Picture 1 (cartoon, helix red, strand yellow):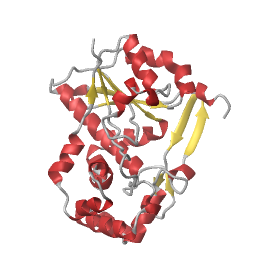
Picture 2 (tube, rainbow, N blue to C red):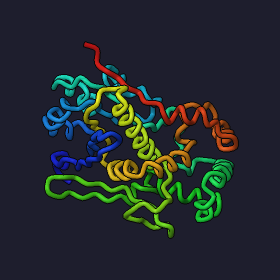
Picture 3 (tube, rainbow, N blue to C red):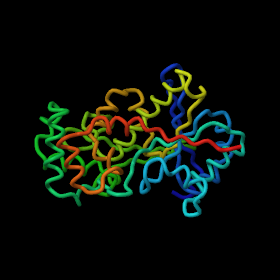
Length: 293
C-alpha cells in the first residue's frame, strides 16, 4: 500500500503482578515508519521505567542492545534511533531485550532442512512432557507438518497472514493452526514454531520483570515493549495465560537452547536428557542495559 509507513500500529495494555502496567507497542522496524512516528515514541518513552527492544535474531541473545547503540553495521534508523531518541527525550530507565530468538548458530524455523532423526527425537521428547497433545499429532511426520505450517516462511505463516489498514492503524494477524490443518483465528493448543516460542518466552520474561518491580529489586513504573506488529496478538495472549506460555516454551527447548549448542546432535541430547537447571537459567535470563551519565 502506498505511504503505508504513515499508518501507526495498535497498542495493547495489560496490568501484571503488583499492578505493573505493560504497553505492548506494535512497531514496523523500517526507517521511514520510525521517522514519521518518532515524535509519538519520544513523548511516551520519557515516562517509561523499562523499554524492551526487539533483538537481532542472527546474533546471540542479549547482544542486540549494544549493537543498536554503537555498532555502525546495526544503525538501521529504527530501533537504534528509537533508543537514542528515548534518552534525548529524558528516559533514564533500563533498556531490556526479551526477544530470545537466537539463530546465530542454527536456524530451526524452516524445518524442511532438518533431518528425519530430529523429528523422531523431538516427537519422543514431546510424548514425555505433553502426552495428551501428542495423541493429536500422532507421528513425527505430522509434527513436521505442524512445524512447517507455523514457520516464518512462505510455506508457513507468511502465506496465511492477514493485513488490514483501518482508521490510521495498520493491523497484521499471525494465523493460528486448527486441528484440521487449516487456519484458526484463535489459539487451539497446537502452538509451535519460532514465532510462538519467542512470544511465549517474552511474555514470561515480562512477568518476571513485573515481579522484580513489585518486589522492589528494580524501580517500578511503566514497561513499553516494542515489537514487530506480527507479534502483538500472540504476546498479548501469552501475557494473559502465563501457564500456557510456559508450556509453549518447554515444548520449544530446541529454540530456547539453540544459541548454547555447537552441533545439531547436541539438540538430540537435549531431547533425550534435558538439563533442567540449564534450561531454567536460560528462561530466567534478563539482559538489561542503562545509559551511563
